[in-house]
Image 1: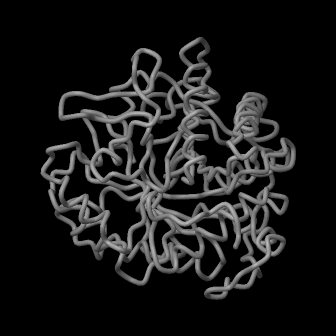
Image 2: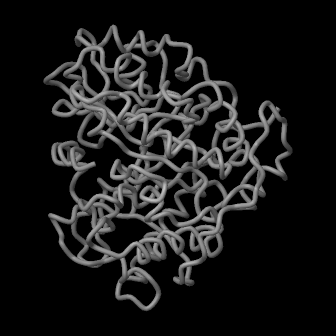
Length: 411
């Protein structure tokens, strides 16, 4: 969503961005639906069976367990998520904090969500934005180090980690926003393209980082990896108008295959999420890479979640996503949403909760974007929306970290 440009513009974290991976077969493979049977209600399924449903049939036990348990939770509840929850936040309307190198004394356990509700979110959002950046130096080394720390700490406390990828344009080495660096790149990252070697090097960084995420239990931390999101909008270099649907699909498939087959990443669930620009399943699937390449189908939606829009508008689109996930044994999620600066004080209960409770959805999580003083999405102490956020948290449908069951084993 291009509203996020505000977020990236007001923090050092907005310098340049990179990350991604692939495999040397750029051909688009048929998008035939999986024949995997839909998960029975209240079933207990073996890990070996769950792995046959996944993009990576050799995924770690913890990664397969995460898929299974999130699928089960979605039948009756939705997990609450927050981008950069322990990375950055706001203490009031004019003061922000961040686990960045230029700040000192910020705890890795600080959380705006926990400050208001007493509990961490169940899902933590992160980004590969700086790890594969074309810029180098100590600042970027720190960003990689703190991201690793925050991810492992979230896993150790039972949380779920998802990574987006605001990847810098690998041809221009400029910004990921098309308006800032209007250079065609999707067709150039594929084999034979001018940026294929650059792209593969970025994917290698992602893979090496993924393999370095070791929890206190000695296990690899599972990650929901969500590259090349909001492709139905025109604001990113991989977006509508800057490549064909076929080129986008080839790039996404190549990314999955290179990470999984060439680089041996075993702790990824692969997520795919367009923005809100669809009103039917066929429109939703315009850029879909195929069931063999996607574990979680999602959508980002800010515009339909504004205060003056009926919750039923977003709910109708959420139903398209949820119905596809049910029919194809995928996870579903509201992968990004929020009302900037919470101008509607009861937005959580009257907008977000109503949209999620509508249509018998099976969304595994709903994730709000990161907080900065100029664009925040969860309230700070004393904000008019703070009490409504508590009411949202206390609704039995929504699960924060204090209510999430164990998700890394099948019991």
